[in-house]
Length: 111
Image (cartoon, rainbow, N blue to C red; front, side):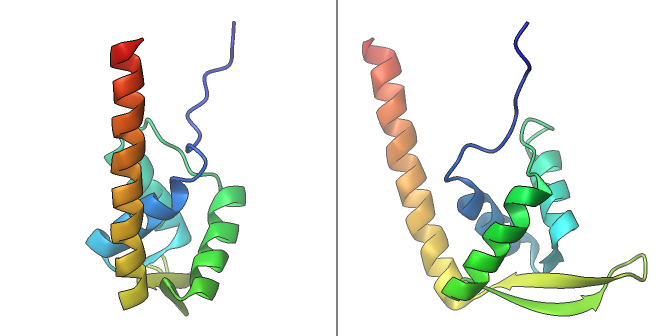
């Protein structure tokens, strides 16, 4: 029996993280993954090994801003917030996702 995989489709992580920060505001990494998992009804899971390098890349691109803070459990963590360029990138990512899903929908309908 094949192992069930619910890892994030490559290329969607930026979209999901930017959307999460755009709607939920400033969050630390664990809260980002928890929100994605919960809001997807447990269908999507973001692994730490994928999330933190992606957050670092997005911060380098200027799409998010990170700063140190303290969690609700009194632990130090890096919190991330979306920036104005990040909101523009989010719009581009959403448009790209819409085109991709429309293309897949058409192929599935045609085939």
